[in-house]
Amino acid sequence: MEFLDNPDKDGFYGTFGGAFVPECLKAEFENITAAFLNCKKDVKFHAELSDLYTHYVGRPSPVYFAKNLSRKYGADLYLKREDLNHTGAHKINHCLGEALLAKRMGKKKLIAETGAGQHGVALATAAAFVGLECDIYMGAVDVAKEKPNVDRMKLLGAKVISVTSGTQTLKDAVDAAFEVYSKTYPDVLYAIGSVVGPHPFPMMVEYFQSIVGKEARAQFTELTGSLPECVIACVGGGSNALGIFNGFLHDPSVALFGVEPLGKGTSLGSHAASITYGKEGILHGFKNLVLQDEHGNVANAYSIASGLDYPGVGPKHCYLKTIGRVHYDTVSDAEALDAFFELSRTEGIIPALESAHAVAYAVRLAKEKKFRKILVNLSGRGDKDVEYVLGLKRTVAVSK
Image (cartoon, rainbow, N blue to C red; front, top):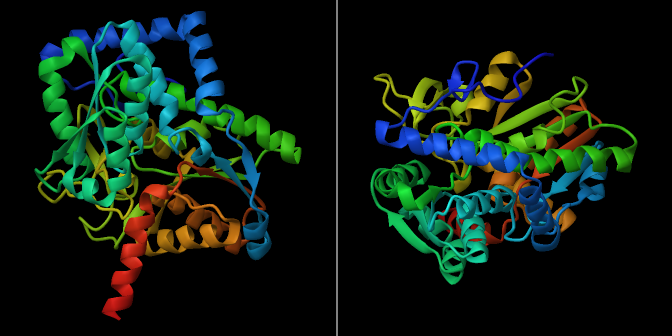
């Protein structure tokens, strides 16, 4: 199948993407694009990033055969263990790249949004390492849900700004961060936390995350002697999914599944399944599939996983959906919670609630006996979610 690996010069993957930004930011975004493309060609930049991946992050992260889960469901289930990275998720991969880029551009501060807090922690870590200031915007709801990550960000020296407008979740954190960035950009780089936003950010984040797929393809082949029959990843903005998909996009024998959060159900405001239920629209400076009400207003998004409750999705995911290369489906809060506990108690691995969506879908496919060799991107660990999840279980027990 022929398809676009990279966006066109204006940042479009087909009809999705672009940079719909104020006139004052256009020159800055062109500067960022030029700086990034120079870094891609710079041997010293790659050597520094590769050294950090190896000696600071702990890459390559292993591919693990989940034998207990496999025995239970009758399929070979493998996990790409991004949860073992320094800071506990895949986010550190692009945060180090963005921080090195900012340093080369002479920026003094990194600014970003975060949902579950993993991007915030990773960026605060990268900022501390390269010696830059760091401001993290986080919805007040997520600040309460993800207190361990908030504490970690502060410990690392970042300033955490609690956003109390709107739904007080990820979309509102992005709104607040962009508003400040538009006034401070000469000294600041907005280090976007996923494959979303105006060009060149989706392209940049995908590039830094592609290490996941490159490793996984080689590791799986070495372990099993073949490619996986399918690869599964959760999709909010979509960075971990594009990261692992990159290793297999040109292998037609490998089915690719992106798993969106169905939340509490299909009604608007009860989920964050932007690809499944969204319509074409512009959100945060790029064209994508956006959850919208009957009047075309951006709808509220919801997921038990704070890192997935975004009402839009990366433009390349929209494109891959349109051409049929990736199949997108949904998993509910209840299914994700079940997978959270099952992986913890079957394999001794506590997944992030985001990653639990992918695990739940892998179990679903294993039960259906459609695939024998299944690879799941375990994008993060669940330390941050333990207190919240156990609180939910206690609440349910009391209400019953």
